[in-house]
Length: 110
Image 1 (spheres, rainbow, N blue to C red):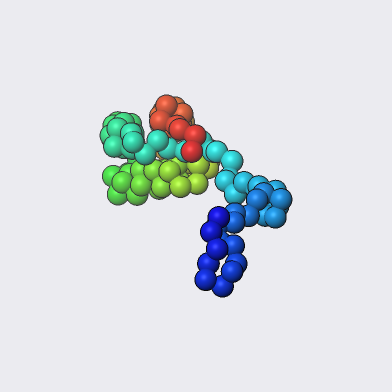
Image 2 (image 1 turned 45 degrees about the vertical axis):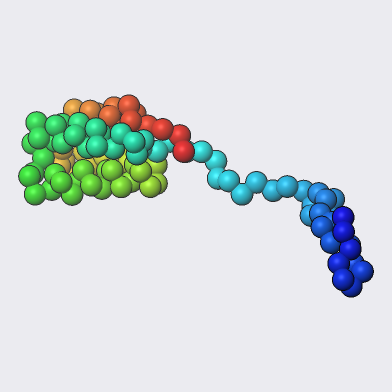
C-alpha cells in the first residue's frame, strides 16, 4: 500500500465481510433450441411441413413461430404451440409428433 499526497492509504480492497454475501443473478438453465444447429432444424422442419397438408401460405409463418418460441422462450412452449396448432385442425397428429421429436433432437440447455 502506498500513501497518496494527502496521507490516505490507497489500494485497500473491500473484503467480502464489507460487501455482504455473494448473490447469484443467473437464471436457471432451461431447454431451448440449439442456435448452432438452427439451420439444420429449419431444413428438417421444412421437409416435414412440405410433406404434410399444411397450407402453403401458413407454412413459413408456422415454422418461424416455432423457431422463435423454441429459441427465445423454450422448447416446452414451442411444443405447446405445435400441439395447439394440431388441435385447431391445421395439421395432423403425425406432423405435430414429428416436429416435437425434432424439437427434442435439437434441444440444448442454456
